[in-house]
Image 1 (tube, rainbow, N blue to C red):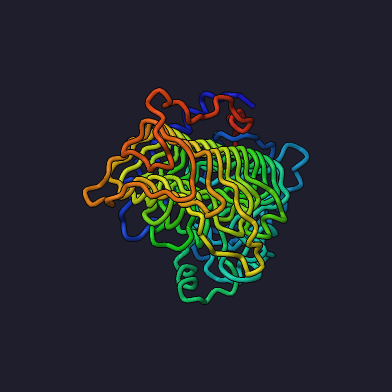
Image 2 (spheres, rainbow, N blue to C red):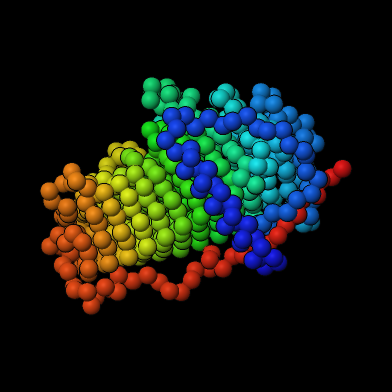
Length: 484
């Protein structure tokens, strides 16, 4: 698993730097339109980095794909993947998407498989609802997020898979979401909107080195899965687009999110584990989650949110080296009476925030229930929340921390944090109710429910030093050779 590992790491760092430069130029433009793909020669051989390499290769064009932006390629994707699935037990396979604009409806992936997008390839989502199969609601949610009943299958979908990779040379997946956003606002949706990428009940998943734009709803949604790596992803959506969350690990174990740049109309990363009584019954937490080197712009949501669908539990999240710019809150915990579950053992350090409404926000009255059958006695447990080594500037309010009466959020620890308030900041920088914890070396001084322990306790807020298994997963140099 470590052939040419250093070489792959260098390539990844260079890709991320180039992506960040490109996205800084894009932010603020009124429309995130994708330019016409440039004509480029078809590649017969190239190298890339992945967790697993493949023995067999094919191009989408070999199965009748036409990248002209108007020809529907759903059958070509389906035929290619079905054909390549025969190699799952004999070295696996990879499907190359060459330069072009490849219009398609939803399609399913297979095990021991890599989908690779050329840098000038655009997978373009169909705007015809007939190209999107309707599937059952998620069992831990009990219904769709937009409507009762079913949901449209994601553009790129996979279930019960082992060893699946979606990667590229920063190729693009364009959800053409505007039509869906309009239907949402007008109340015209028959089913819940599709996501761009959803992988369910799977193990060993890599999603990397891609640009995702204009998703109808959530962008990347691994659920009921383990050993998931999301790396080097750029996500772009208008900041007013509804529910265009960036990356949502949901009831997953061992997940690593790193080197991502996200501009969205909702939370950049939203950690979830099921909704009210359905999530409690399903009982699958999200745990052992690593988030690092994330840059987020989301004026109406959080850089990292935990919840509000957290009824299966969230435990052991480690986030570091996070940048939030023009974002509503840095870290937000969202829950409510009826959620049940827990959010505990949360560790965040080295976060930089610029132009924020709140640095920290905890909400115990989020509401938004799946139905009226939730248990009013199902109270969430929020404990051992650690924030340290952070700076923020131009902040309207340092923190809004609101627990639940009779069910306080406990074990909150904030240390070595400097928050520079905006010129028109709130007169009271901290509001705290139904919480308990401590602070050390925090400016401005926190509320009385977070008593200052003095500078000698600056290390009181811990961050685990031992690594998680997902941090040890390596990539290797893989090759694509076209079958001539």
